[in-house]
Image 1 (cartoon, rainbow, N blue to C red):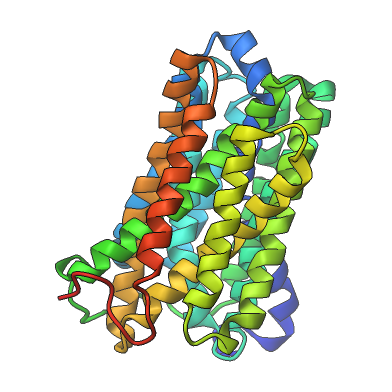
Image 2 (image 1 turned 90 degrees about the vertical axis):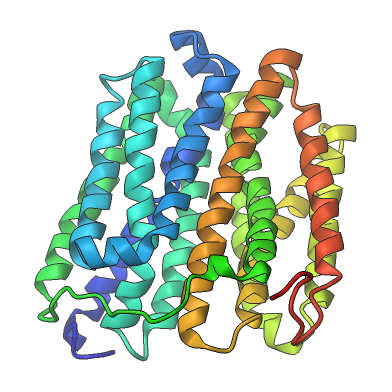
Length: 393
């Protein structure tokens, strides 16, 4: 650890980082299991329901694209602080702004908060820690997935006690706790809140960056689609909201396991295709199962989707990093790939909402996503070691 934070405060910083991570997905994961209740109470249509996921993910994309600008203008301490306060306020307001317009407004506000933290937290960890940054980053990303699983599994029981709007608002308490912890963490750090300048050229000027961004975007679209619409899909099939929420929670935990397996195995596969192609086939099988036998194959579907989505996310980023040698270019490339990718991924929940509104089902959404996975398989075949993707400049 660097001199930025005293060694005796490391444990508290770890708790703070994990608290921040826990707050980045409940706003997204808590909606699906309650969607039938929300729609019954507000009259919200399926297209508008899709926006509850689309708006935060879209904000994540914008902030990832302009992460360097945000770092320079706000700084890491202030930017992360604004982000967690935004999440807390957005959640708490859902007790009162419980109309369709209010839910969309708070989704957008929470999305901006999530996006600020996601854009600035990696640089904060790298700058404030030297030897512990990778470990803290691992704990942070694990906490993000843990927050999604916790929200998905607990939101329906909470709604039975607090009603749906209270169940959505209660996560503001966790965000408030994280805000207080962050303020203390900032006070422990004597390092000025400055941002290093990067001399990297814009990644968007390279053809390969666009291909990598599309690959990441389609893969992440599978995550946003499942996060938003898997619980409503099973609720429509006759499952209780609590059971559908537990299904999403179990799938999310499987994603965590998949991510850990990738970190353990990746160095054994310099040719990433030997991992990537099986992962994509699992994802394709999961989508096929949702279309053909969602009730009878529910456990295999959950495992296939969890392993596929959970492994594809880190693999997509690793493949992007494989394409460049210059660390400065790597930073610019990652911002472009993730930013543009999140913008692409944000469209899938909205598209699924439109499909459900006009067809009364989600079969076509799963089919479109399956077709996207086929495209990813074809692209992945070109990711040979030390080769650029097709069309590289």
